Amino acid sequence: MKKGIVSVIIILLFGAAVFYFGLVNMKVPAGQYGIMVSKTGGVNENIIENGKLMWRWEALLPTNVEIHKFDHGIFHSSQSLKGSLPSAEIYTSLIKGNPDFSYSFDYDISLLVTPENVVQLLKNGTVNSNESLKTYLEQNAEKIAFDLSKNIIEQNAENLVTVFDVEPAVEQLKMSKKFEYIDVKDVVLKKAKIPDVRLYKIARKSYEKFQDMVDALLGEAAKEQAQKILADERSVNRLTKIGEVLKKYPDLNNLLSNGGSADVLKALNNLE
Image (tube, rainbow, N blue to C red; front, side, top):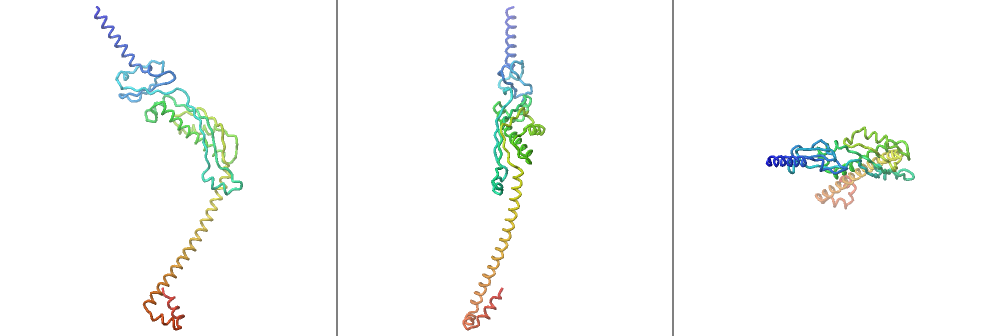
């Protein structure tokens, strides 16, 4: 009888141990969720939540399971973007008053990646920890700020405005599905300054015309210089040949000194 009771107790303890070590939700702290990656099964798509019972047999195998833990909630990022339109320094010198073709934007951007999308990011190797997820979101917040700024400048290319509506740009960004794993929850444009794009285009066109004129003048100058070099080269060749003839026929020197120089020089100059 006692042996039977002991056996039952041992079985119950063993079962309790198996149950306990197989509980994966116990390894996830409050405020976070977990995604299990095992050597036997790879990335498991079932999200592990603290307080929600989840038992996995893979966790019974030593060193087989790793629980990747991620923060719940929205990621917030502040982004500042500054720059100038291409070749702005060159073009501004062509316009009276030296207009400023620079731009600047300050954003507060709120992003969300659902746990299901984090599973996909784990599978494709984009992230492998909570910190790498934050880095991923920060990098994409920077890209979003750039895309929004470009869109705002293009939308206001014909009109110089000081008050901007960022919503159309945000909606266009969402429709593009460029950031497929990220949900843009909110964008606040705190400050913005854009250049006069219409004036910039005028300056660029003027510069292109100026450059065409310079290229034409340089072409003419190069042609004249080439002709001069060719003429000089012919003169040098002619003098060389005259020297060779005088060296070969020394009697010509006597003829030159005796008054027949005009005829001799005329004949020598006709040498090619």
